[in-house]
Length: 167
Ligand SMILES: Cc1cc2nc3c(=O)[nH]c(=O)nc-3n(C[C@H](O)[C@H](O)[C@H](O)COP(=O)(O)O)c2cc1C
Image (cartoon, rainbow, N blue to C red; front, top):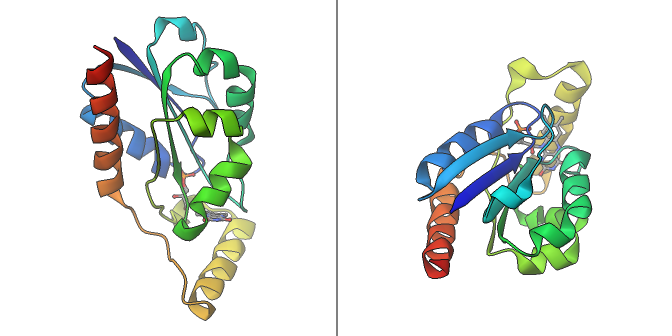
């Protein structure tokens, strides 16, 4: 059994989550940052976990393309989906817009790991955007981003059970 994690991260939060996730999966795990490396030879893997982060309502386009391009192969494997976002209440909508419905239906688990604003990494426009998001959250009494590390544990637990069942 072998598991592949394919992820995309803009400011490093989901990248850190991916490393934590790897430690919790009871399997040999390889990680690919899809923004730097092309995932090849998916047939080597029994399980594939796919995740990205939301900016201006959208996941990285490389994640969507990966899912669309490899749809048939992915439908043959155990898969799990995860995202980072600030507005946790919108997670289902973000997933729906990012991932083809057949794959969403096929996924063993879908989790939101929360999110984090890493101000030191943001450019001028991104900082402005964050100010708007913060204002919106304040006015609407809605979510402010924060890590939800327990969802990484839950995700890994659900996935480990699926892997055990397959054995
Ligand atoms: C410029 C910017 C725009 C963002 N836009 C959204 C958004 O539209 N919806 C949302 O829920 N979260 C949004 N976020 C929150 C990110 O999803 C969150 O900061 C996440 O942790 C980023 O993960 P990453 O560092 O792996 O890219 C935004 C963050 C930034 C910095």
